Length: 421
Image (cartoon, rainbow, N blue to C red; front, side, top):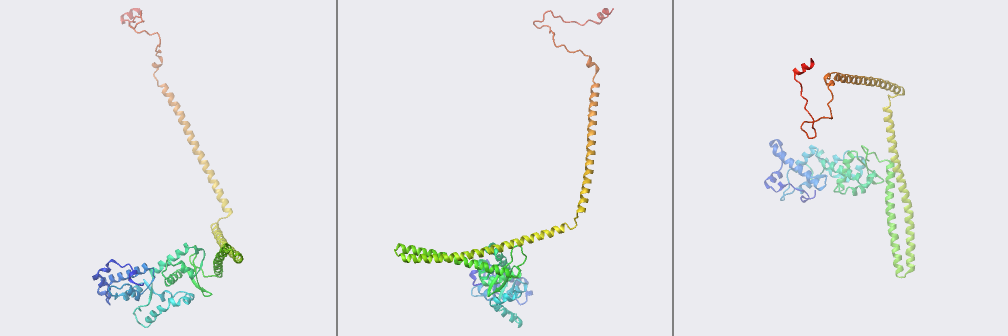
């Protein structure tokens, strides 16, 4: 924390009455007024964390807090109490305690950064003093975990994701948008090392960092293979830069030769051209070596892929062996026989059911025929003895063209009797 202008202060910062209360010291006994005590503690705790997050910092000190939250030539009187309370709650932790579980390599090259200031707090605590040194640095646990996740995500999205081992300088460049400075980066790396996502070590005086690769739960120690690949990749980068530089130098020699020719200085042009040829020859030689290194790296990458495939095959064979543990040919044949027997039984049942349905249909057809015959027999006999209705030779009385037609009268009963005698 550098100054108050870097921190987004709350709206109540301009309220004199409210801020006079917040800038006052805490009561020695919280039980005197727990509401006021907790309200003031929550205000400063939240503001400290927010201020660090706004600036991308993960550490605080009493000296920085007094400078950051200075108002009208006054500094808050209770910040030491706030730091002690946050430390007891586990929200912040002394850098010395935070770095306590790292390996000797970390402590060796980080002693100046990680231990000098925290040890002052450690010594004062051992002597029985509970006063917080103004320059003692504390790690904000919530923020360092956030930064650790961000850095891990940045690494996995970057072009370095295929490289498990990075130099500390490369990591500093990669983390420039995540960590505000090298101190913050060291705290973040400590958190990642606690989470077993990175391992940090020294090799020939060089600080290197190895990241956990995708598909792994934790990072493996730096091996000779890792260092070999790291050296090859480093050589590839240096040779690539050298070849590019020689190419630019060759272009420059060619341009000088053209300039000398335009000015009529043929001998100088010839000398520049010879220099260009020498540079190109060196560039070709380095480029051939560069291609050899790239070929080796490709073979290593292919071998690692083959290793993963072999491991997958081995896991598959083991799983298949377990799944077929209780399976034998005899049991399989027995199961097939049982299945065939059940299928035959089912076919017989289906045939029986089908034949029953067919006979029922035939019975229904016979019933329909019998019903039809009964209907025919139930018709009246008189209907069948009636003569057919004539369809020709009819004459309608009174119609033109029907002359000579006489209406036939029905005889009376008396006449019918006489005719009968």
